[in-house]
Length: 190
Image (cartoon, rainbow, N blue to C red; front, side, top):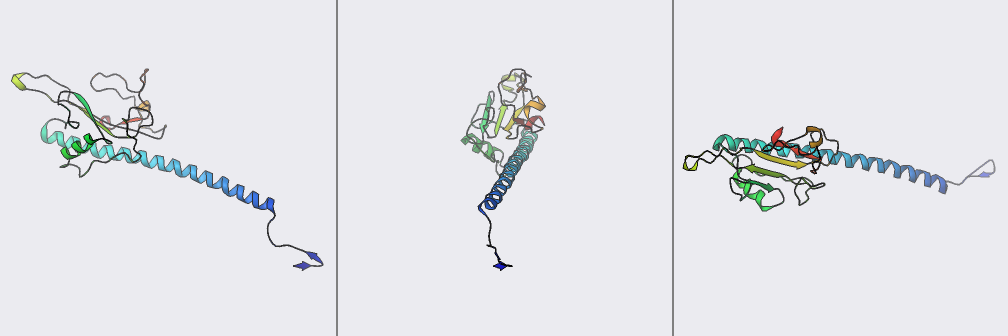
């Protein structure tokens, strides 16, 4: 095209294209980072909801039977755990089927116990029931753990903030020199 004898070319220069591509790349990386944070927050929110649903089922079981369900194939009088990545979870699911149709599993699972850093699974643990055999009351603690690990290292319900204690020894989980992940969430104590 020509205007007053001057020729104009249509299009962009290479520098203009590089600037536009750089801006688009920067904006997309910001959006992706925000999206990843939103996904982490959503998974942590689901963990809280899942464990609250399981806790409700466990408490309903307790109301019906007077003791908490066993964790998988463990003996009653031991501190034992069922993990959402193992077959023990299916045993617990069968036990609680009257109260919850299926036991949820961690939305971003890793096949290791939640007490280790970056291990995402659910854990349910029981500590026996009272044993009245032969007229002897052993007074075992009747309680349970229901644990997961958050991905968000600033979640308000994490162990580092809540300062959870073991129910049977009252020792702190995540502070005072303990080596457990500071990201733990304990639903049985909420």
